[in-house]
Image (cartoon, rainbow, N blue to C red; front, side, top):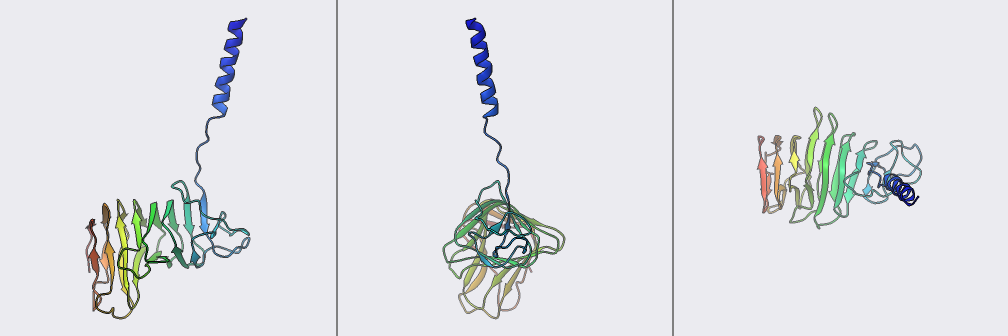
Length: 229
């Protein structure tokens, strides 16, 4: 009898272990949305915070993005400027609408560690930063790719020191264009940089003309495998 009880207990423990095993983590799709309203669409301009819907049509109540490598951020609807007040982690950024702009809120460096950044066909993504002496907006461990006709535009103003960093394993496969408004004062610049690890740009870089030449600088490696014009 004791043996039978022991066997039953062992089988019971097996079932408990089987059904109480931790469940797998599932990716949560977030949709950038700065105006709460059920079915009113997504997109807009704002600072990352409680600025996300969980449906592509827009939600009545917005939520904060948990910022994990399992999750997916979708940028669609009405294009706007997305400002990051801190560094951010995500599994993927998907840009389905052209002319979104990513920027930072201050001169403190903000690093976007996003495993995959994907631009849809004919989608342009604008990158800029708060005016600073360092790379205020950085991409790390990111693979950046896009569909036919997709581009990245680095945007500079009429003054200031703005830089975009691709570092620590970031790989860019989308054509990059430098765009500067007017003529920069002496000492100001719009630049590409890497301050940690190795960043790789496999695409063409254009916009190096006129009085506003490109600036490349940094304390690490920025590998340029495409043409510069």
